[in-house]
Image 1: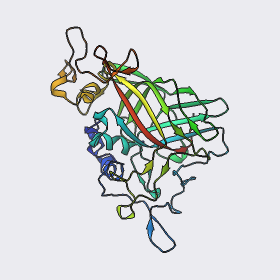
Image 2: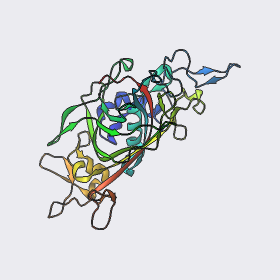
Image 3: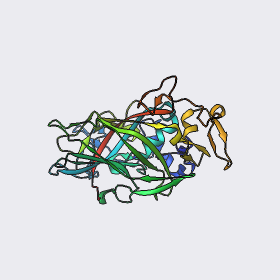
Length: 337
């Protein structure tokens, strides 16, 4: 996947304040000031640019990919930017910058000053015709590669099986790919370098869509060297993202599932966070955690914009879920499993 006290917003990591200072300055929704030690290139006339210099050892400077996938039939990428577009509660302010900052790589010589604790991987196998995707734990040396996370994680009263999923999909001759039928995927959002702090995103019918791989298989989207400002240490701001997105993802979260995910720093469930109104929709349980209020039949009072039974927009009789959408860029990495 930089993050200031951030997790106050999305998934709660007050403990991440140390990572945070860098986060607000380098996320796409950041405000500008930067502590990055990244380097800017120069033109033939000596003018500063944000083109990576020799200090950046990325194999593909187009998207700052770490390895060369051009001769491989099975290859990996890691999301280098993730821009949430829905639900509204996750698309603004500290929540937005937290997600973006934890996704952004920590490659300062390449002008990337993220915390890189939130890793979402993609592995294509063009011979088998598959795309495998899922989360990975933070690594100390990205050049040594990442591994898909497969483990049981307990949050609140619920234990989840975090594991990757595999789609049947093959990029066409122009690199375009899109998943037609979604699958359930629990995405682990690790919030610190050791992977000891995590918030889970329990997605239903998750799909990766409208994607385009570069001809080298190293990039989905590209690094925005030409639009970033060297005077701002080549860090993004609200109108100048660090990457141009090259794919989208969608899915939905049931409010029932969201109410089992506890945002510990906020002492509330993800359901309450999604409601954006803890006063109206929250109630404290016996464990002193604020969860979503329910009616006499146990139905959550907060109404979402999606229906689980039909996997379609909510109606007057079914509004038990919240749709999630995002756009992303991805850069080549080694996947070890």
